[in-house]
Image 1: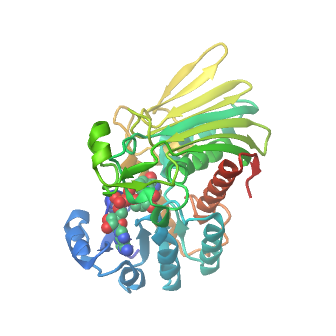
Image 2: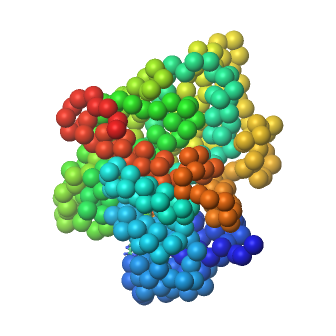
Length: 384
Ligand SMILES: NC(=O)c1ccc[n+]([C@@H]2O[C@H](COP(=O)([O-])OP(=O)(O)OC[C@H]3O[C@@H](n4cnc5c(N)ncnc54)[C@H](O)[C@@H]3O)[C@@H](O)[C@H]2O)c1
């Protein structure tokens, strides 16, 4: 089989994770493109890429690239996906797939028509313990699901001196916290539970109406300059939400609640959910992902990453006691995507690929649209 050659558009936090995953899936990083030709050159060594491209558009069209990984700020996703599909390239596009549900649906249709592989790294599906939670639900261990609840909390945007391109709606989109991390939570709990969120009511909050005008790199934080510093530094107004609280109903009669925040001190990247069934509950903590809590009226167990179901065992590449990490999720995801690229079977209309696909990301974009509309109208709203 020919080695799959990847081009990576973007050279920041997640691009480096993709580069690692490409290699672990047996591919090579054929090239990288950052925001300027100079930055592309600087990224070659950091990502261990073969060459720099002057622009992401050049990379997307290059004959030397089989699959384009779109790891740029959100507003560039749609245009780069279109350029890559038009050039006949497979695509791995970061979430959110695009800035609206309607455009995400259009990209999904384009990808289906192309017959190319079109995937989105909703990678929390690749923790062995989230797979195990899903398998327990599918086996009927929980009984009828009644409640689905949890949160996704971070703190790297908690202070007025913290800023990033995600805060600017022209670059990140109209939704910030929800599109950035709430989308991961919704995808994961729908995938684990088999329920779909059909109706919701949301309250969004922008707790910091102004932030430092200076943008910062992702996950780097500003100084705590206190009130005096905050008053002195140049500020820019903020319109995107720092936090959202959502109540929802599912298509199968459960209710749920979700808190999403990028301003929760001490929470670095805490994706936590609990699914409560008639017989048992299951809960997962992304900051402590080596175990699952299986609740029961008579007996509650902590299940370790050992003796797992066949589906969880499929990706569980390191033995229990050797922690499974974020990069391992990306590597397992990329292995599934590259296996699909290598498989000459007809694609495009495949309703259930092994990996999260454009349709899954479009689904989260529709939920994001509903959250924004509900928060603006202060009312329950159906998810389209
Ligand atoms: N799936 C996940 O778990 C996950 C995690 C983090 C980020 N993401 C997504 O990945 C994307 C990138 O996020 P990040 O955290 O790496 O951001 P980042 O700020 O660390 O990196 C963004 C990169 O894009 C580059 N860039 C900007 N304009 C460009 C252009 N015109 N052409 C080419 N490159 C350009 C920048 O130079 C920078 O290298 C976002 O869409 C984000 O939502 C997903």
